[in-house]
Image (cartoon, rainbow, N blue to C red; front, side, top):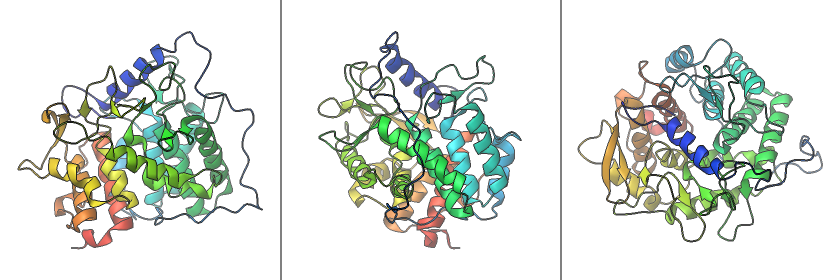
Length: 387
């Protein structure tokens, strides 16, 4: 969630999405799914978790100076991950990313600080999910109790990886509770088109959205789905991988064949009503997660590679899918780590030497994407990082 230039921001886009979707639900007590009636416990001993695929996150970054720089710039002593380009807010996504990166760096003290702040300040709902946004200049700091499903997924995944890395049962139990809860409330496993992931519990499904359900393909965090069966084996996580790929293949809009940020899944997939038809801040993470998980076919990456293979490779375009033209540019260098990861995954292209370290003067979002891309490359494509 960052403000790459003087106009526009990912946080503003998400806030607008939540506001638009929740406005229709104002004054209604019902939600798309009934509330939880009990807190889930740890997995039963007689039902062992299915083997999960994918390499381990722990230690992927090692004792990297880039992580220390990131920690000093974006993580407070209390454990709040700061979005430097958006009023210094914090959000469940950022807390989840910070926790993941701390595990990747083998930094348990920082992980515990971030998790402690998250638990105290965002786990304020009546269920096991997280409120999506915390604002330092508002009282109460959490003004919107809706969740953001990608933040829930990231935090649950990070807790799982921490439990695996450090043998801490409490992390595993917390991961399970969050995963079971968003599985019950945000995943529609019985949708005839495949498992459908709602962006939040409230506001994105009928009847509150006439064009609902709405989906955002950047919320399909494929490497997390490969691992969460360890703590929540009752859910069909591979179905989410399959549906994400299927929805991506059906969301090639306009001459650029790119997905938009917000998509109506009411009938045939199309750009959602009331949102700009842009491939933008959220959607650039789709190929990051594809490559990190090592899923998909070469053609699933082709539109992204075509977009990023032009002469101007030092910035990423935000594209209006209606005509395929750039409307804005993401200029901070961390963004370009995603095209580098995709080129590595598809063509075994070595990472550019300048992207093997993270510059310290970037904002939260591009710096985070850069570190995530490096962690993904070291986990799954280490040959691309060899000198």
